[in-house]
View 1: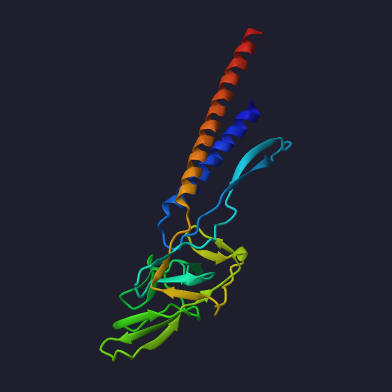
View 2 (view 1 turned 90 degrees about the horizontal axis):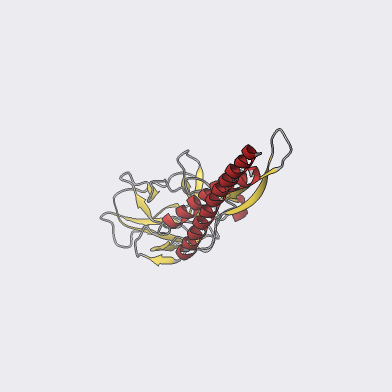
Length: 248
């Protein structure tokens, strides 16, 4: 009974964790550049003062799906999508470097190039990109170089400014944080790569497979219901065992 209840209880708990992860994937099905989280479960022994005779379920996030999302053409000057492998470098909330594929960029009132969530985009030197305002025209080249035409200048008077820091770390060396940004596991900053290319006027869609996520949500809900029924069965067995002891 004890084994049955412990297994069912831990299994239900981990089913809930899996449901949270899959629900988060589904909620970000329309988030630009989002990479879906993966989940798996395995049996683990419980170690304590006695012998490790109890086994519980544990859900892990082994990584993310790095499959590319679909390319959406927008025609907007500040929209960019990474072509193939690679990442844009941004400044996270702690002031460090982090990586994202979210290419729907914007200019702050002070001319700072930012993501749609307000994170500063960094240049090759690791500094925030600040453009001189006002600009009549702005373009982002394939190599990440930003060019613009000052207000009132001749149509062909395009000036080149900073270059977006584009990186291409080995996906085995990066990890996704709770803020949705990727960082190197060793805490180091990835050097800029000249091999990463951008597509201007386009965005990368989320790589979440909505049908797959819905199927997994249904599967996990059914498993959770089974675990609850097992706990109810354990309770009934315990009551029956108590009645037999009283009769004896």
